[in-house]
Length: 521
Image (spheres, rainbow, N blue to C red):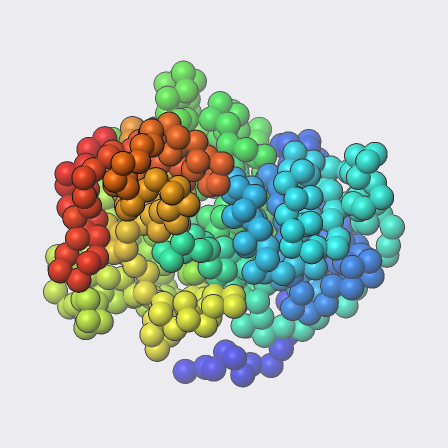
């Protein structure tokens, strides 16, 4: 077996390559700003940004650059500028509350934070708390910010392009993506250059990726799905990306149905496809150029799959994680119709296995076990968290925490979360994180959060609460406290008050029993 870690370093600059091979081909359309750039322009802007990072902020190999902003083609310029320098991009979830962002930014310790204007106040608060010296507003700083916040476009225009990108190894970290942690604190999954490349390779045969693709990107770019399926593959192949600032069902439908836009690829969570199918224009819509509709993030209801299949666009389900960059399993367009409900088969360069609670392999089909994953697309670990890395990875095998079964044909089905996570609107929610916030309320003696069915978001949170004797607390007060301290998608939608929460003999909360008794929608 080739030891990738011992390979000689090489300079692989995707943008510089396309600037030479296809300089005048359109690379990106930004729907929010109405800007369009060719490959020559993208490479020039990114090379100038890299030079500015090095000159103005002394960014060097291994330094972190945080981004707190809505979808924008600038994020990819930041990403590739970091690649040219050997720096590490930290995309931040703008839906998070300030205390959550302060923990993540404090952990990543970036040298600079780049933000857009709508998030300027949040960025200022986080930067002050975390001691970040350099802020950059890519919408241009306001008059009262000008003395302490740099202008993104001025940085690019004020310097000559960098023309000597660093050499890198397969395991060169390029991104840190924070995922919610089961212990109540987010963990920074380290994404390497090699992981990004192998995800492209793994995805190609399932999703027909190539130079002629036009990807419509509307998932948040701070998510691995938005960044790596299929935006980064389009950058790798020299295709084209059309970037939406935020998902708008009617606008997405317009771009999918109008042949002038030429969209061939998109990836969404089930809610995206549900909302588009509920738009009045969907009934008569045709999709003349679309070739691939990928779906992931949570189980896709069968009726929704059939609705899109009737339009000639089978939703290709897949399974992946931030830690796997992300693709692990996927369906082809053909198997998306014949294997409805399956997450797919393993990618070519990824190994999977099912194990029982003792880590022993399960060879029989139809038996549920935990899915473990190994391959060049798997993270080397978590930033500043050797304990979490050791707990999650055994001899190179990543424990996904998902309960899965395999059929006789080798297709894998996601049955449930092996852990207690639930998925709301495509966002992972870990109950322990919500519970830690609820325990800030002095009236609460014990609390356990579960996911319950929801017609719109697939699942939402429900807090099961035991109050201290003689204390009072309303459902409204509990939800208001969560809204002040958590991202909106993590806030429980309902509360049930109990006399006691069920435990097993060792004192562990019986979540399954709570779901049985109080998990109705």
